[in-house]
Length: 597
Image 1 (spheres, one colour):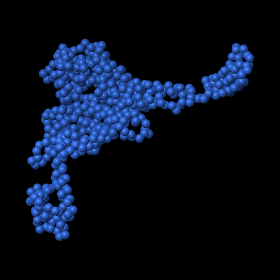
Image 2 (cartoon, rainbow, N blue to C red):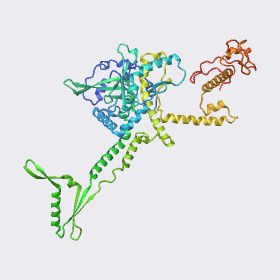
Image 3 (cartoon, rainbow, N blue to C red):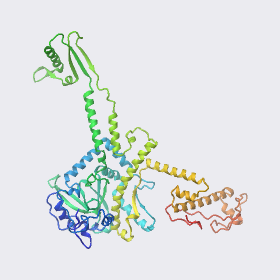
Image 4 (tube, one colour):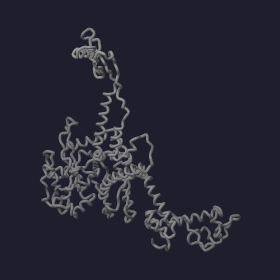
């Protein structure tokens, strides 16, 4: 896609003032009267220009493979692409895109395909223990806690606009069938610093992305085709008004899959097109066959004696005609009439028998005997489920959950596929969240970077968690076996086999110390009762309640169990008060003079 001029501010280069002239020149939508400025069509265009992620553009600018003469910021970088514009902007003919999406939606309504898509969507929206569907995950601890608090608060405001709990299932279903999702960011014209105030789902068939490079990797913006309805007939569309949208004005989520020419995003349901066609055709053919073969048929063997062949044939035909018709009352004729009976004609056979054979006989042919054989249907159903990556075991609703390794491997692959879908969705939401933070001026104020955090959906919990527990069990068994060897350090085994970090090792040591303190306190309670602290104070012994060995009451100050307590019998010091346990993600606690890990 051509660049749109040079400017010291760079505003024209992103989706500049000459866009409408460019679109009017190359888009095959017919004549269109271009307005002088984009702001007249999209008043909020300027508010989004300097927001959003710029990582892809920055990488492409310094790339050897992607930075070509067609992608540079040069006034002469344009294409003569009247006939091949679809290579740079897909679905350039509005009717083609609508018919394509209609075909996908019809496929999605097919019973077996709908069941498979429901299985996928049901597993994509999950809640964790705190009730969160998606959350912010930080890649390191370099961000201050105050900045994290601001990010968390703004993310909760931002994500509520999408209503994932109520509409998340529908969003994933749209991605599977349409391949794309477009959310328009709604802001206040007078108060853009308030950030994104809402997200409006735009119909997929009305929006197209504009790509800024030959590889169709960099999106410069979007074109919205706003229908213009007939005032006298609201169901009739007179024309479409082309409205440019800045790339940061839209949250764009796609399937992550291109077609063979890399000109359009195709939905996941395209994988099952062949299997869907085969299954629907085999079902139709089986129904037709069984309808035609289901009734029983009669075989008439007519004795014709020694008649000549022509007379025998005529004789059989007279019998057939008399059998095909049945007498009925005809009001128009005022009496009885012979009425044709097509059922008798289709269901029976007539054969002539020569002299010397048996007399006339009537036998019956049984109907189709294989009506209960559905192996071919089940084969194509399994093929359809495999094309949609849904475990075939879920096809049979009456089968119990199988925990065998074969089923687990199939379910694990399905869970990984769901996680990939969630990551595509989260990536689009992250770009919109960055736009929100930049509008709120939090991004610049806190000097944030895209690499400092990610958005993650709660992964599917079915067999995915079972596999994770199995992996943990394998690590624990390896750790236990290696620590039985006295020549191997437990600390090294924790890092090598349990994959613990240095901080996690130190946190574990701190918890071990707390556990020992708690065990010591329990021993005092068992020996001296619940008032052991008073009994341990000078002169506070309770008659009939001896102190635990090594803990004479005369050695404890009144009410003091901190680290500054005088030494106990045997050189031991009284334990300090229990404080809050350290968190796994918190900085490493102080552990005295222990050597660094």
